[in-house]
Amino acid sequence: MKKAIYPGSFDPITFGHLDIIERSAKLFDEVVVSVLANSSKTALFSVAERVSMIQELVGKYPNVAVDSFDGLLVDYAKSIDAQVIIRGLRAVTDFEYELQIAQTNRVELPELDTVFLTTSLNYSYLSSTIVREFASYGGDISVFVPEQIIPLIRAKYKKL
Image 1 (cartoon, rainbow, N blue to C red):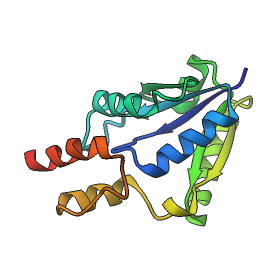
Image 2 (image 1 turned 30 degrees about the vertical axis):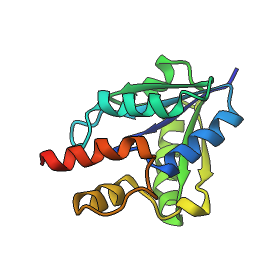
Image 3 (image 1 turned 30 degrees about the horizontal axis):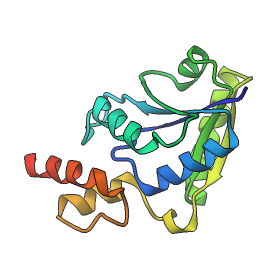
Image 4 (image 1 turned 180 degrees about the vertical axis):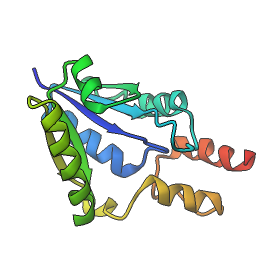
């Protein structure tokens, strides 16, 4: 049974992320969407909030679970017996960075593979950073994120 991890900050999760999750769910027996708890970055949503949002959105996929982790991805992969890391690529610049990470992870844990999925053309420009930027100025984010999380994003910017 092949277990894959789709790691990321997902702050917030976008249609691009959901596209990668849906496609990964068709490729692997189990996919664990893993929210990185990165203390060096200031996130819009807490790890618990992001996990909760993602759980609500991926509930229709029986082979997708949601978790969080802190520390090295290779250590986390070992701890949950994952064999594959999934990474989404939007552009060539993503590939250069992701290739370095994949090769480093492979040195640390040779049995851990990385699979790159190119984003659908509809989402090749999309990032959580763009969503946060638009939302911070009251822009229309309905083409970037699912309807049910828009009020959560709006509420965060009303508090700031």
